[in-house]
Image (tube, rainbow, N blue to C red; front, side, top):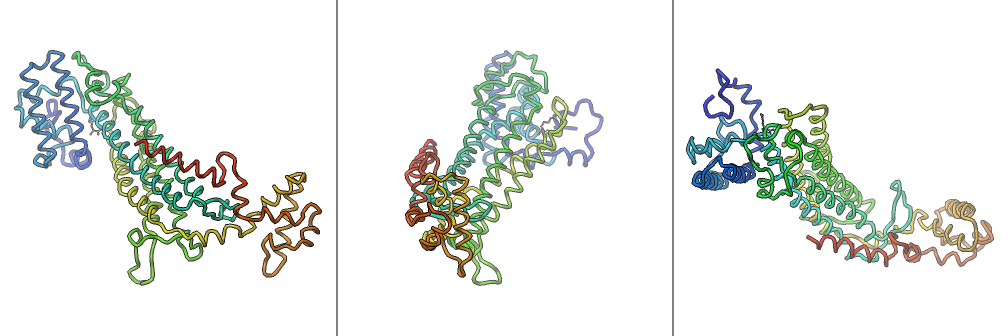
Length: 463
Ligand code: ARG
């Protein structure tokens, strides 16, 4: 078993099917730069512990530099015989530093603490990339809200007309969860900032190596507190895929709305040509494929999370090879979001809203009935009664053919429903009045929405 990391006690090399199943270089090779960074830090602690001379350290570091350069340029890649990123890189190091010196680097470390550290380093970098992509979506929502600071739209519950709201308020309602996702990523990064390096296979190292020094050199806040936990836990990888799944779900909720807003029936938005697709048979078609793919990829991101959780369930301590299955879901979640986020922010930023259509629909479906009830409350009518009375107004409207709107009821019709219903009630039967009246913190009144527009903008400016 020439060239492998573990041949000594074996009389034969692995069967082809064993090697094929075991192999991970086709996905873990992307961790090579992190593994080399770990090796540099490890060489320094070996030197500090007296296990490498000054000149051996220099030789090791320059061989590692040469290897890093060849990995970057593509001159060095995994061979068919390499089992994983660690084995491939050790082969590369031996080729550059010689068997004697190169063979000294592996002392006091295991692929178990190496891989656990590499994955954390990778995830920390991706936290930054994904956060920035999510903030671009937030910025697209905020810029659309700024473009339409006072445009009303029909607010819905149960997908039925409920009460008028500002379009900007609705758009910002999609921005806040995304800002919380960014916050979640920052919070996760605090937990990721512990280095398992030095945990060895599971029990730690006997060679007097300093895990704190490796941790500091690799940009961590410190080492993990328990070597078994450091090598065997993957809850942080699962947490990462939870947050990426949540981002996928948040994008899917925006996307679903864009899809029906762009229908003939709604007519709220027109998609930009550059962010939509055509049909191979129907010449007139303009399809919201980005939004549909976002909706679809949310399922895939949820799958990455649930697959990993299923792998971790009931797994005994410490390291088990099952844990190698943590990487592909995490990598897939990253690749998926890094494709999806710029497409979604581009789609949102270029949506053309139709404020006249939104304004026309805002008061329809008796969406001002709550305003009638609340006006009656201000005249001293108990809300239970006011609710009934406003409901009777709706019923009166529906008895006409064609159906009347609330403000079209005559003075006599109003008075017949309840003596408190004087013609003055018509003052609240306007979308503008209804919007302006909802002016407590968090409400849809233009003054409140203007404040919100400052808040997320300020948050995204923090980057
Ligand atoms: N490829 C392995 C993984 O991703 C690295 C650790 C392998 N350790 C072992 N003892 N076989 O988890």
